[in-house]
Image 1 (cartoon, rainbow, N blue to C red):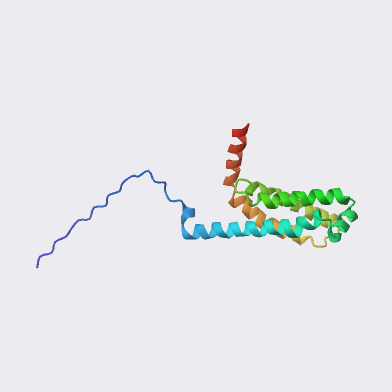
Image 2 (image 1 turned 90 degrees about the vertical axis):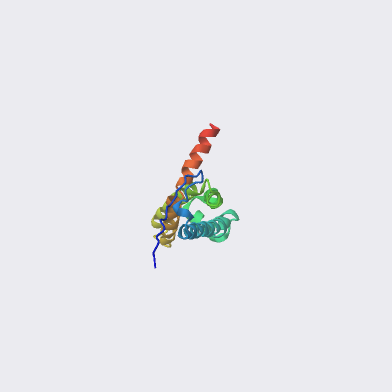
Amino acid sequence: MSESTASVTTVTTVTSRPVIAESATPRGRRARIALRGLQILLALFYAVASALPKLIAHPSAAEGFEELGWGSAGMYTIGALELAGAVALLIPVLQSVAAMALSALMVGAFVVTITAFDGENAATPLILIVPLALIAWARRSSNADLLRLVRRRA
């Protein structure tokens, strides 16, 4: 019996197709979906549970702002900022900036709860900063897109 060996030659061609990014892997896809789900949950929380009571002047929200001395103007302003942040979390080009802005709002909420309300529920803003910081970091490439849009308009 004679053995014959065939040589295998690998031919690599260069094509104009884009290189598959690491995020196109199933693991990266799952991470993107999970992050998008987190953004949707946070947007719902800020719109429904946080902004809505302030914007409809629910008694529980109104009494807190009266105790602070900020009145209804402060309550409506904070409610509008939270609602704008919730909407912006869902817009791809604004998502990172929205997460940073809502984080800054939560730092302010933490300071207010520590100073004016003796730390009652002070952990809530701190807990919310963690996923917001994750979104801001993971979606940081959208900041460059936003900057390009702003420069194009100027």
